[in-house]
Length: 147
Image 1 (tube, rainbow, N blue to C red):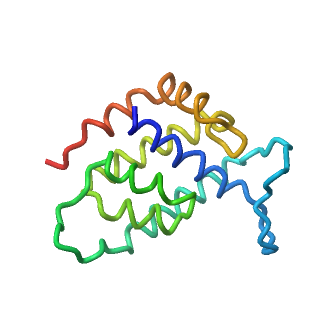
Image 2 (cartoon, rainbow, N blue to C red):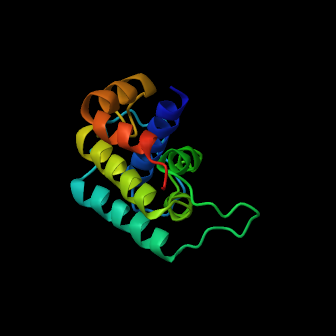
């Protein structure tokens, strides 16, 4: 259950990031109760940014250089508060199968659960939607071992 919550938090944060306006006023739209519609091109652009940055990013040089599995990427990315650079750095630490599996899960959620896991969504609805519509991708991510 903890892993589901971490991944759901990631998607809520990622949607919040992509739903922000283009102004540089520093406003994060807190307190705005209007429904935010995240346009598919914005979602696609965000995914492309994550993929491009992950391809360029190198894992930090630490004692353990074992590539991360998909669940570890999700746990890390869940702590990024929607910051695409941070998510990319997490993704870059994964093995190639983990990166592919993580991208498939993230894509599934952004396409199938935009309101549930979006900026105005809530944890329970996001978890329910992810389980119902992205169950296969969640299982694949949880089963990824990088071997």
